[in-house]
Every structure is written in C-alpha cells, then in structure tokens.
Length: 440
Ligand SMILES: [Zn+2]
Image: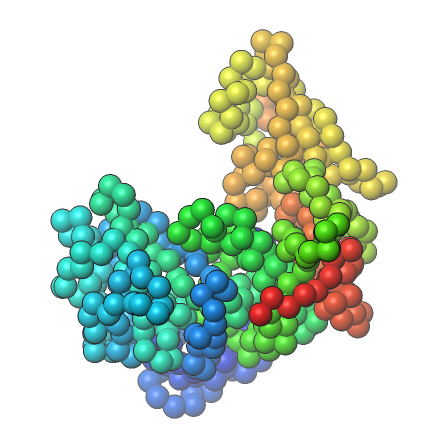
C-alpha cells in the first residue's frame, strides 16, 4: 500500500541462507559485516533472509494467500534448494496429481511458453493450471527473488502468455509485507499494529475480490507491497507471529463480524481522512481522526513536501488519457477545490472541479486527480495542499503528509509506539469502533 516509508541504508540485518546467493553473513547494527561461514558473494547476497522452514504449509486452503507475481509473461526462471514436484493445478490438495518430479536443486530451471503450452525444464505440460511445490523448507527463487510456499502457473485463455502466482500461507505472506511496508527497526508495537492492519487488508481484498479471480492481491502498492523473503527479519517475524490470525472487524447489526478494509498510509500530516472521501463506501471505523504523532517521526522534508508543478498541457493530456468523460471540457482553464476536509490550519482536498474552455466543467476525486498527475505519488505526495496557477503551469504547494491518509498512519503508529502505546491502542485509535478477532 505505502511504498513511501523512508528506510535508512543499513538497519540490523540477518542473512543466513538464500536460494539465489547461498551466502551466509551476519550483519550487525552499524553496518559492519562479519563473515560467519560459507560462500561470500556480496553482490548477490540479499539482506534479512531467514532459514527457517516455511510455516503453516498445512493450514486450511481457504486461508492461503494468492499473490500475482508475474502477469502475461512467456518466460521466467525458477531455482529451488530442494527437489520439487509439478502438480496438476486444477485439482485440490486431496486429489492432486503429481505430473513430474524434478531433482535438480540449486540450478536454474527455465520455464517458458512453447506452442501454447507451459514447458518446465524442457518438459511440456498439457495442463493450463500447474502448481510447483518445492520440498521442505518450501522456498523457491523466481527471477532472482526468494519466496515461500508454492508457485502456480496459469495459461491465459489465448494461450499466448501465462500468469505466475505465489500460493503462500498467511504468516509468511505477512512477513514479506510488514518488512516491506515498515522499517524493521521500528518499535515492536508499531510492527505488530502493521501486521494486524496488513492481515486485515489482505483478507478483506481476498474475500471481496479474490473470489472472482485466480489471485487475491498484487505485490505492489496497488494493494500492499510484498517482497517475499527479502523483507523478512527476526523482528518482523516476531511481530507477525505475536499477532497470528488477528484481524480487525466491525460488529454488524445482526451480530456477525465483518472484516474491514483496513487501509493505511505513510504519513497523514496531522489528521487522517474519512474513507468515503477517498475510496467511497462508508465504514464507521474508517473516519478521520486527529494524529499528533507522525510529525515527530517523519522527516521534515517528507512531512512538509516541496511545491510540485506540472505543465498545463501535461495536466490536460494525463487527465484526458484517464478520463474520456472530460473531453467535452476542451482546455482546462481552472482547477478548483470542490470539497475539502477542514482541519483548521490546513485542509485535505477531497474533490476537484475542472473548468473547461468550452464552458463545461467536470469533477474528480482529489486522490484520483493526484495519482493521475503523478502515478508514483512520490512528488505530488498528498491532497493536503493548495492549488495555484503559475503561468503555463499548475502548482501544488503548502503540502503536508504522504499518501491517501485513510486508516492507520504508519509514521503515527510508530509515534504512538514510541510513547509506550500498545498495538491494540494504536489500532483502536486509527480504526475506532473496530475489534480484533482471530480468524484461524
Ligand atoms: Zn499521522
């Protein structure tokens, strides 16, 4: 979800085994690397990876997370440090049919499309759904990145490409998310709050959208960032394990608990935002709350971001490319705030009015407007800002915060943890009226 947290160049790191590098190093806080044993390949050695076998491989199938790693590709490279089985991916765990066994551990296996079929290590498979199950410790390397669990290949309908999906139990998935979304040296209670928020968001998306497709989440900030084993560390695993199975829910009038879309973002700028102003939908637990905590955690240059400018022609082109409905406007002659959440000294824009040279006008959610102009969100960092016309440019200035501002403020969570608050207190602050339930 947020890729905007700033991470120092070196935190304390533990690297014992990787499928790709096979290096054994121990990094200490401060950056001095001490060779423990084995092969030293500094260039290919990734940080923070742990050797433990993959947990929860026996957990009920309904809880496995399906992460889309590659989309519409025709080739990729697999490496495992154990033998692996190729299984018919259309069958369930009870009736699965093993198609082949590969014994070549530690060597790259080419997987590619050949004549409309998937070929693994020179062997062609007729199935359109194929699962690769590496033996214990159930770790594999895909195109240079280490992951846990299984790997699924789905041949696309036209037979011209395939998608690659990581089937991973929830806790290993979350270790790969929490370590990507937050620096691992942050307070344990902040990491635990992040683990619960990420688990909640995962199961919300899985239930809401995963039922209608072959995967649950993307591995990018479009959902939440998942970096597999390279994001893991002992502290990250501790936060994930200490909150095992916990998600946030709100009690419905019929007495049932509903998992909420636990959005979170980097730095709210002083006040979080009501989800209905950003994503639509109304959730009593996703209202805006005051956050006096993030300013002390975020670097000043990230809390207050510098003015960003876009050429008027560029603004028009980007908007029309994304919103054909704005074409009747002609040139855009004015950009006006049409909705805002007022916090006193500053306000978050929630709706934007675009005035056209033809006399027509159109409206767009401010967060959509921001990400249309700057899809990475790295320059135009939030809608807590003012809009000014500067000659042939539109400028956005007096900016605060980073991200959409809905739900937990990650820097704020760290600020609360530094003040001694527990993960439960952090979560109940940012998701008021929510409760923690265990789903497995
Ligand atoms: Zn905040």
